Length: 109
Image: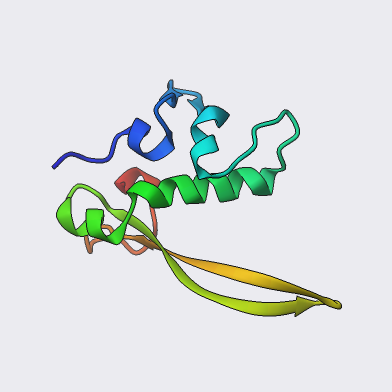
């Protein structure tokens, strides 16, 4: 199989040049984002994580030796900050590179 494509990871309307990566908010609607000109940075991060998780699954990782990243749900717990209880969602992100590197180098993926 081939390495995952830009569209598979960042959405059907994603594009890139040598200087820019463009991700359309319309592609994040499927994971629950309500697009607006004032979306918080954190809401965009969560939307991207959820989008990435739809394709970068452990099952796809095992089936495709060209894929090197997987994201999966980990655990949930209730945590308290101050006097407010929060549900904490954890995700596990696995990055696999050939065992010749001592650091995570984006150019290896």
